[in-house]
Amino acid sequence: MSWQAVGIFDSGVGGLTVLRELSRVIPQEDTIYFGDTARVPYGTKSPETVTRYAHEITSFLIRRDIKLLVVACNTASAVALPSLKRHFPIPVVGVIEPGARRAVEVSRSGRIGVIGTAGTIRSSAYTRAIKRLNPQAEVLTRACPLFVPLAEEGWVDNQVARLTAQTYLQELKEAGIDTLVLGCTHYPLLKPVIAEVMGAGVTLVDSAAETALTVAGILRQKKMLRPASEKGNHHYYVSDIPAGFIRVGNRFLGGRLGDVYQVNLDEDGEEG
Amino acid sequence: MSWQAVGIFDSGVGGLTVLRELSRVIPQEDTIYFGDTARVPYGTKSPETVTRYAHEITSFLIRRDIKLLVVACNTASAVALPSLKRHFPIPVVGVIEPGARRAVEVSRSGRIGVIGTAGTIRSSAYTRAIKRLNPQAEVLTRACPLFVPLAEEGWVDNQVARLTAQTYLQELKEAGIDTLVLGCTHYPLLKPVIAEVMGAGVTLVDSAAETALTVAGILRQKKMLRPASEKGNHHYYVSDIPAGFIRVGNRFLGGRLGDVYQVNLDEDGEEG
Image 1: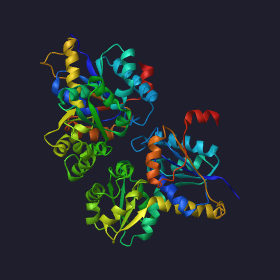
Image 2: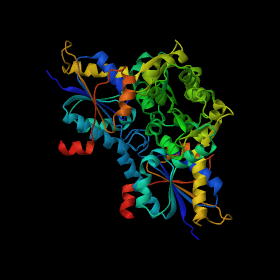
Image 3: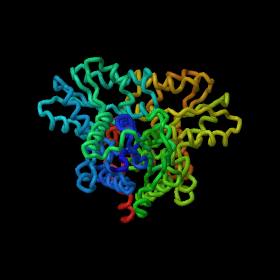
Image 4: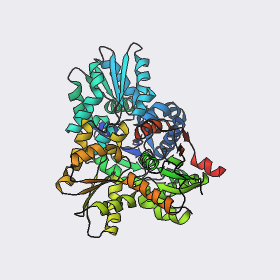
């Protein structure tokens, strides 16, 4: 019986949607979240740089004794997952594979839409993951750069959000997709307005929720789940001043964000 | 007679609006632009960190033989200007003072609005600069976090931009300001829609344009201006992969961005 925590990291605050889903699905688990707010965004950085950051953060979390790592960041999931799995002796779960798998399961027509940041869409990571599971699938993608700042501003159900969603999603809607993957950890906050724009005929796949289900499945299978009677604790670390993370993070978690600690990964590495 | 260039730096692409104004006001001058795209944004980082970055970049530009430095970044202008002026033997111009000065000059009522990023507004840098020039001035501020991604997306005159501007600016409009400072280098791209929302009774002060006029004035006064018959060349450096900078930068400069070179400041420092 293990009492270790689940580690989660993201370049910033977005991965908190994965944490939120995790604490719904397996509320008994402790979590340790790391937001690399000093070096956000990852999407514009080279794969080598992002992989190096991912290794530093994973080392930090493993020193805090995690039993499983969630890479709750699309960019890091796309470039660093194989390397993390090779180097660290714990299960590593990304956010791309679970969403891709679910999309292939639920799509009847095989016409699947994917939305994400410019970096995620440019990387084609979801398209490749979907095509690996169903080579016949037709994947249509659209970058929606304004969705992240809208979510962080808390403008998730006003007219600006609605109009932005209409502008970004019009083409995907006209193309007749039957499934849309929310390929960015910020997007679950905009799910109601995206659902409204896409209409009832399109199934939304929430990568954050699917990732949480995958994590629960692995822990169950490996008999690493804590007893359901327990109540998990949640710890938060960031790499820069926590003020912005706290403000936006509380928006993501409905005000239930706990204490947030700032750490310097270089210094921590020397201690560890 | 000096043939050196004017150096300009920003955390990213925003400072290009200052470059655009400079090349209108003094088209004979060469410029060297540095966008710190590997470490953008500065607004969430500590003053010590931002000051260190500003020193690194200024050293880089001085090795390329600049005669004047424009800190075309509000965060760095707010925290690093005195230190840069002490350490480097060339004139250093920030973006806050020129905009504040112009606002105090044009406002009749003394009720001045300032809009900027969350970091700039939180720093109160414009409020302090304006109050230094006119202690009786009443300064009303509003952070407009969505304006930067709107400008970068090129959504500067559509319905989303209009509705966003209305939402952000409503209170300032109702408060009866007669002058509004665009306290972020991205905002000049949204000037038409901001002007439309604020109405004819409110004078917009464009920090980028005022900064360019200040630079021209200093060069003229110091007899460092190149002959007006010359045509300046413009060089661009960034600290991360240039693709995003080029795409958005061309939007800022109307397609006239030249070659962009990626440099590693650490390595460059060893050479220098």
